Length: 111
Length: 111
DNA sequence: AATACTTATCGTATATTTGCGATATAAGAT
DNA sequence: ATCTTATATCGCAAATATACGATAAGTATT
Image (cartoon, rainbow over all chains, first blue to last red; front, side, top):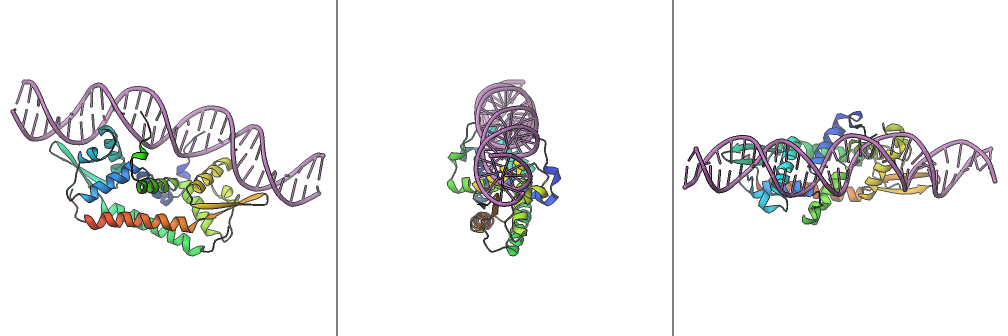
């Protein structure tokens, strides 16, 4: 039980689900907000803003990076993160496409 | 450890994260697709289409319902589900708003 | 009333996520 | 060289999610 069945779905479904999961935590949404609001890429300032331990924030950053939503680069003793707008836009488009397609087919409420 | 810190974030962040989590599984995306493609609200046909056990599908349906993304009503011996377009649109708008706001502020790549 | 059918729920096993402290790593400052 | 500062990683505990079979609960059908 609890075998992973995710591979049995389409690649698009998997990709979208991955993206959704990446932003499916308030902390990660907050991080994205902070990254976007500052003109410079901030690293540890995120820790000051969030109500989480440094190691936890680092973990969330890693997840966002793995999902391709942010880029990171080492800048001296500190790390610099920023939003990968291209990846972001790509996913947002796919999202809108998916749900617009859904909507076209069936607009009437049936229940 | 592993105490839930989600309450320390803004309500908007929590709501969006909830929505994202609801669609953060390929099976649930597939369910939404099926619900939208058929003209009638289908119940058990979803089970036939998905590579999952009936009880698992039922669980996913429950999660989508709890998140407010679908409505369900009992129709004789079977259940009838359909997409709650209003809730859907609300969340999609919030999403777009959030990320458009982010984008306006900072378009230049900094890393 | 008995049966077949459809869906929901319960119990359970396993996997994944969340979170923290402690520790490693790496660069600058002294 | 040593110390400070910033970040990443490791190890662990707790919580949540995923998946299934078994069973319950409800409605038609016979």
